[in-house]
Length: 146
Image (cartoon, rainbow, N blue to C red; front, side, top):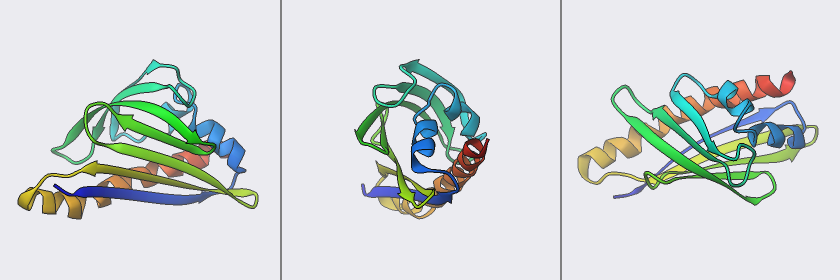
């Protein structure tokens, strides 16, 4: 088994504090910025940053659906870490200032399968997840413009 990593990044025309605030709102904002690849999204506990627990299904590919139950931690300002209780998947969202703009980066890592299946997972899963995250980041950019 090897570690698999998927990343996406986008510069958003809004101050970092505003972007951080919106990204940490799992109750109101997050459902609006998630793409159709996310289903049955629900806030189980909290709803604002650290301590929030969310549940959803992520349609990673046509055949692969992940049942996610993520607990959110905030190890430093501008960084949200979502740790899935159902797998080794960890997603880190970071927002850093770039003048009056923000750079938002999302990175997901997990322990991939072994053998030939693991080879294909490591080769194709990051591209598919990157595409999903590009959509979420585009919606986040629209959300902070409003």
